[in-house]
Image: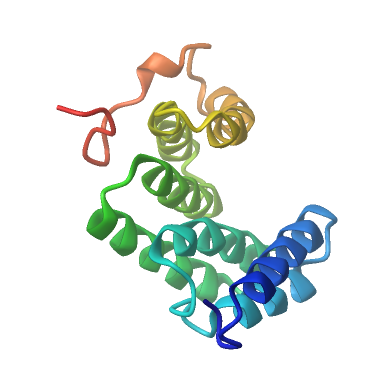
Length: 161
């Protein structure tokens, strides 16, 4: 639960943040997401933190707060490693891909996004669908062929051993 202690209120703030970012208004998106989970998102369940961290990375880049974008991406990577859940790992990879794109490394971004799509195939169709359209332009910019199978495993494999 968020700082308010009310799960429904926290989820409503999360939805508002997502809608604001999707609507092109990053500052209220950031405020809503932090209101939902607190300054470190610890007020939310761990599986939700990575999905919201990804949105905070996006909002930070849109507002020019590069330092925050890098920090949220690193938090997402650490949390994904700790949780070991495919959908959350995919979210951390999408965050890392934004960092790679910011650095001008289209190849790394494409690899991370393709790998995120693979992780999201664990049954989370929405998150797979979110990863694929992000991967396509990054792969084209990197000069990759139209195959998501070219991704190398930069994170531990998402499929069960």
